[in-house]
Amino acid sequence: MTRRKAAPMIRMLAAIIAGNVVYFAVQSRLPAAAQHHSYHPDLGTLVDLWFCAVFWGLIELAASFFSKPRR
Image (cartoon, rainbow, N blue to C red):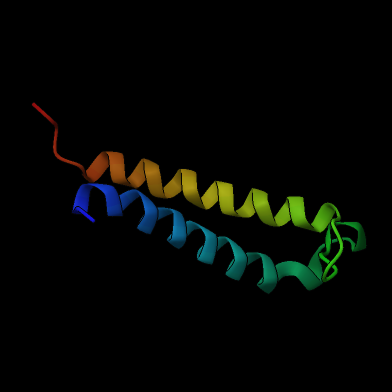
C-alpha cells in the first residue's frame, strides 16, 4: 500500500481511537440516555459516533493546514 493511500486510513483510525477514548472517559458524566449499553443500539452509539466524527474533522483540518500544495 502506498503512503498516499495509507494516510487517510491512519487518520480515520486515529479519529476512531481518539473519539472512543474521549467518549468513554466522559460517559459516566453524560445523561443516562446518552450512555452506551453493550450489545444494544442506543443513543449512546450515536453520541460515540459524533465524538469520532468531530475528531475526524479536526484531524482532516489539521492535515489540510500541514499538507504541501499539489502541482
